[in-house]
Image (cartoon, rainbow, N blue to C red; front, top):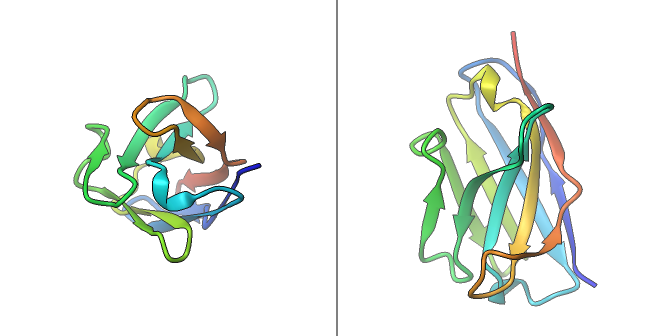
Length: 119
């Protein structure tokens, strides 16, 4: 079975930065497109960013574009989310996901890591 374990969440002030990591195991990481989602209380889960299996292409939700950067290191079986210029509305549980190749269906979900942006 595949597993995804996020880390790096925490409390940060508005305007600050945070780097999330997601360590994958139990599947061929380099063959899977990866994504970050987030979910805040009372809100639907939303896609934050996605990256192709090779890392050649990325995509972002409009509200995150220019502030967030998704990357991956296939040698380390790890995907990252660099978050800059954080805003209180970025507060959410951030989840890592492995997508079935050539589809938008998620095969594996991480447990999530809490990001809180406040002063």
